[in-house]
Length: 486
Image 1 (cartoon, rainbow, N blue to C red):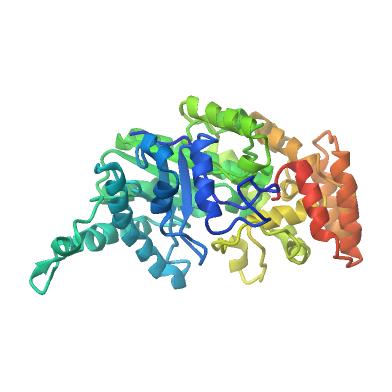
Image 2 (cartoon, rainbow, N blue to C red):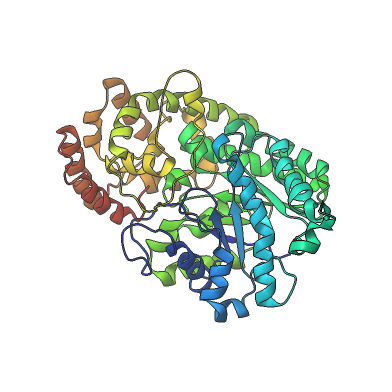
């Protein structure tokens, strides 16, 4: 089985728009063009198709095969290149529950379209991703619904006739369900969730598991997110040896250091940090904020490398640091939330589609903290010269820093972020938070990006004076220097 190393996603973290988009927002058929562009030009092997919101096109397979028959006659969907569906999770999004069922019902229809084009029995779609998974039951429900109700109804009789004899057979006979695990507690027990699912679903060949990078950072801080992921990947690797089947992890990383620092410039470094990961997500900034040849080169690099065992991480020490960073981070976020929420309304929109909901661990404790999704959160703070990577680090001691320096990638990521710090942002903060930020920066030699500082100083001054007319324009100017929106 050819398990993709590269996955194109629809996360709107880009500043620049691709050449095939006529305006500042990707919408409708633009996403069909985007999937083709990812496959044909960038040589990415998998496209995530987000099945939420009124802008979603459920005829993606038919449109790709109709619009680009020459390409897809040479590259077979489901064999050479892949479309993977992202469904809602009814536990979190009750009003989207039926959309999950509609998505599953669409898989046999897409199979029929593909069979007519290729004259073979290869399924163009055979994997779906379920977000915000916290138990094996949530994965099993999706698989069992497909097995028992989508495929199972083939033999149900209506007026004496089997449904399959009326409308044709239902294929593929089975699908793979990929859990996307996003909160700390669930990620730290990812091995238990996957073990239970694999055993109950009787999975024999392989299992893909997706671990989030953005939402853990948004919930618990950047350093916490890195360590949570590394513990989880270590546990999944050990589970693979225990179960005797291949487990292929996916990491959902963006271009901003806070969301993974995965760019064409850092691809090799991130592969070295997460060597056991099979699939890396290539979000919009990765694809559109760098020259096309540089993107292709990074994709080739990812595709030619092979996953190995994870870098060892001391779980006990990691958990101590996660606890320390999370506590301070969440305390600081309470003060920053009003600033972020006000600023986020001026972040330029990049996709017409409705963004799916996220999990905010710290909004469940009665504190009432509400934040935008991770991309707008990062864009807001970066535009004010306060990279969110700095948050939560103020109580780390020398021993903690020694440990973190031994964990490849973390310090480099911090340096990539801190160049965009602007001390003018301190004028927006309380004395206590100001002191904490200054303390957090002490372990680093800071080389400020002066061009970015110049623009963010204007943004900070305009923000303080409620002069909001040019805010969005300057946010874009600063983002162009960084090569990511948020």
